[in-house]
Length: 386
Image (cartoon, rainbow, N blue to C red; front, side, top):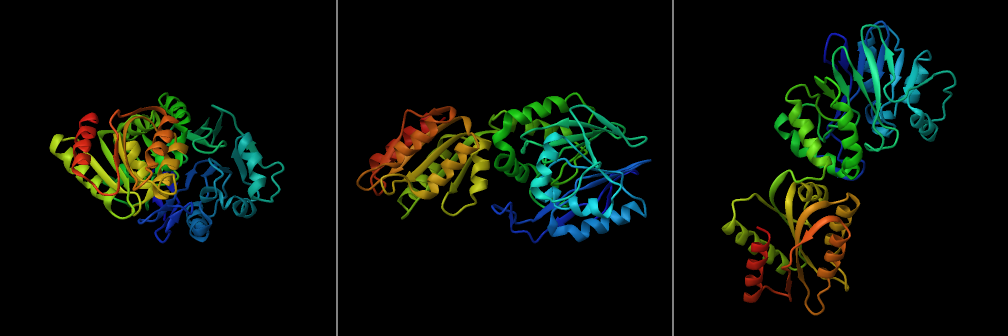
């Protein structure tokens, strides 16, 4: 599709509504969009290519926008294949076009393509610029947001930040604006979230710029209420809770742990007006569960013992939290085991290995089915989390 961002800046990306798994792991029921942009001036810059699934559509869009002209530059913000798949094809089609990237970009390029770049590369450093005429592109390095070669581009005439994967989200371009935070949050914590310090560094650079529009490589172009989006990124990248509330995550084998989770939910509902979310780890999207764990200020986890360890869906969830550097939260533990409860010690070991996690002094051990004494213990655990 082609969209006019301004007289000179055009969107030439594509929607991919039929994609089922992004990066072969994230469910995308609303598909995905791959964004690419063109700036038309005395010289022409193309900002990133798109995924090979939409190669033909991208070249068609590019040809229409160029209207017979030839691009002078291809800016490579990020070498991940959903953005960089068509670099070699574009370079072959436009032999006079220069490739703009940083030193890490061009170290990585040969890993993906066998192509002759001799005399065709423009290596930029932090704060360096390229003039297109009335438009000027300035480049800022954003290493590990979320690959080491990532950089963003600021166009000062129209005050546009081309933000690479920053401020991206799951879904096609025309998803409802009200859905931005939900799918942007799931995208952020599962893809970028480990690198909060690096996102903070990039936000500090962005704060020095007059930004009127944000053009990410996934999701909608943002041109209104930018303080809202930037504020969320600031909260997320500081690992601060977005919502003062409680997330109940449970993994049940035969239903007894589920019964305890639902009873705990009702107990909490009777005690507080705080938002409470609950999820069955065995039947829900893992990446939505990661999103909720980071969203809320508190989490209560209930899991069964299994093979002297912990039920695998619960272990998978905890492993994901660990590698995404879950921190700065209060948690509570409920375990279930019929003869040798072991889940509690596994959960505790995970949480003790995370940064700034407060574990409630009240924990609950259920042996098989929920008993009256366990309900009283759940009451005490709920009080400890409020």
